[in-house]
Length: 245
Image (cartoon, rainbow, N blue to C red; front, side, top):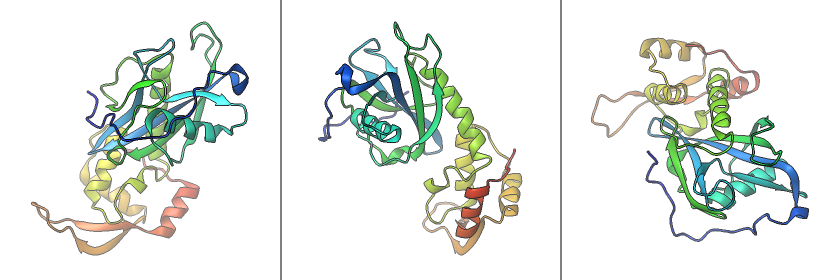
């Protein structure tokens, strides 16, 4: 089911629709695959089209590229136009160009992705959309075109990355427990991890520094707090690591 973080009435910027043939690149589009973590669940940002061949159906937020735009700028603009979300660091995922992916026309799309904390973003349905919402990856509606293929590829890519790069660590508070770190991995990998084994592997990476503090104000036994060693974090960001389960 969709989360309750849905459209609201707050004002947001609108950009003129890209319906002028001489203003966009023909046959080339962008689609944004935005993953969101929300209380240990992995979600995906979707919009419902209000016009065109996909009217009334859910899709990844995307659209056409203006002739004068850089690709990442176009991805950011489209995301803000359609959902109200801005200032995300978007990375290029893959180009999808199956001949029959778009009805009655050859359209190649460039997919961008990001991983954010879903609870930090209230979505606002924007240009040519009637709704915008977060959906759990296990309960997605039927998507237009080849967007299910893009989502599937993106999930597999994200799961590979989290085992080789410190992906998603920025979603944790500055001081965190080992359980919070484990829940981050479990949400992305969609597995239940063995607690002692997980903690042993994490500590071997020399990535965590003890804060010599415990949780406060919790109804259970307070756990030790850790932070990321900044030098180790930068090293792993640059060189990667292998963290297989």
